[in-house]
Image (cartoon, rainbow over all chains, first blue to last red; front, side, top):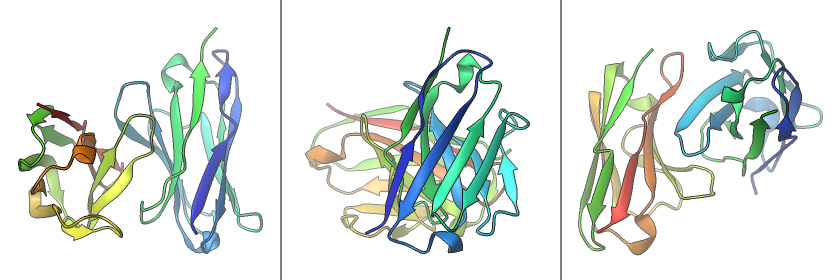
Amino acid sequence: EVELVESGGGLVQPGGSLRLSCAASGFAFSSYWMYWVRQAPGKGLVWVSHISPDGDTTTYADSVQGRFTISRDNAQNILYLQMNSLRAEDTAVYYCTRTTFDYWGQGTLVTVSS
Amino acid sequence: ENVLTQSPGTLSLSPGERATLSCRASQSVSSYYLAWYQQKPGQAPRLLIYGASSRATGIPDRFSGSGSGTDFTLTISRLAPEDFAVYYCQQFGSSPITFGQGTRLEIK
C-alpha cells in the first residue's frame, strides 16, 4: 500500500528554520517526481516545489525561491524540504505527493509566529 | 502563470441533484495535465479526475470530467451526502503548477 507520511512541522519564529520530511513506502520512490504543496489556514492549495527522480532537477515557486530547498534520499525513501528565513506567510499545512498526484500525505502544520 | 478560475465560488444543492463545476484557464491546457480534487475539512486532497476526464481509482461513476483548451467541467450526476466538500482543479502542464481557488459545494 502506498503511504506518504510527513513530519517536522511545528511552531517557529520569523526568520527561523525547519526541515520537513516525507517518508514514502509501498511504491518505487526513486522512479517518481515528488512534490510539496501547501495550504494556508482556510485557503486553497499552492504548489511549493518539486524534484526529479534522481534529485538533479528542482523547481520552486517564486515565493520560496532562495529560502527553501527540496531534496531526497532514494536509499531511505525520504523527501525533504529545508525551509529557511521563514515568514508569517509560510504558515500552512505542507503536503507531499508524487508524480501522478494520486497519493498525498496527511500533511504537517508549520506555524511561523513570534 | 496559467491562472485557473473556478466558478461558482459556492454551490448550494440538495442530495440527489446534479452539480456542475467550472474551471477556466487563462492559457490553454493540454487535457493530459488537468486534474480535479476533492477536499474535506482536515483531510488531504483526494484525486478525482486526471487527464481531464479519467476517473481515479475507486472514484464513483457519478463523477465525470470534460472539457478542453481553457474550459473544463466537473460534473457530479447525483449528489450523495458525502460529496459536500471543496473541489479544486489543477494544471501541471506549465510552470508554475497552479490550482484553482476552489468551489465549495454545500448542502442546501
